[in-house]
Length: 257
Ligand SMILES: C[S@@+](CC[C@H](N)C(=O)[O-])C[C@H]1O[C@@H](n2cnc3c(N)ncnc32)[C@H](O)[C@@H]1O
Image (cartoon, rainbow, N blue to C red; front, side):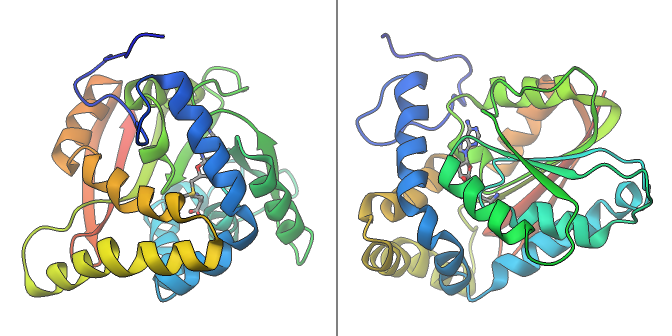
């Protein structure tokens, strides 16, 4: 298959991969392998800050989550931590529908379902590819994705698919890592992220390629401004950028036109 270049921003291309199909398959294999230790490593390697970033993301959309009838989709949900954070933050009535968590790696969904079965969560999991979501047009009021968007084989196709399943005026939140700008703490973080995290993650998960892929994919990911422009080109307006953790974690939020 020929290399594909839909937009200058493209999509993820793990080492040695030249097209969308192979990229998706490599990403899928990688996350299937690390699924059993995914939560443990997330909290360990981020010093549990990942929980705070997801909570902040949920709070950002409080105006939607306060509506018991709001329909919410978390794409690339992994084991469901953002879906659970959204569910904990929202107002529920007897008619509320579950927050839907969608991912294309079954072992991640299995873990998510196990977590959902403990305690009182209104969260449902669906096996789905973010680029071909099995939902009707204009279904959701809010679509979020945490640390997953970067892994899509086509960012443009992902955004157009998100726009399709969102209602007019529905909102999108993309939480991602980015290369931090300047500053001493940004430098410390960069050193940790590129040198320590891949070694620790590789040793504990037994999958060194997955934890090498993390900093490499972040360094190739569009800058916050580039992503903002792409979102605007793909049917979103009012794009806001929030920067956390010394500029290494970014929340893009926007409204579907
Ligand atoms: C880094 S994990 C993030 C999981 C979760 N959102 C979190 O915050 O912990 C990325 C997830 O994106 C999923 N993913 C990547 N590409 C996908 C795609 N095209 N469709 C659905 N899920 C995808 C992976 O299977 C993985 O579970």
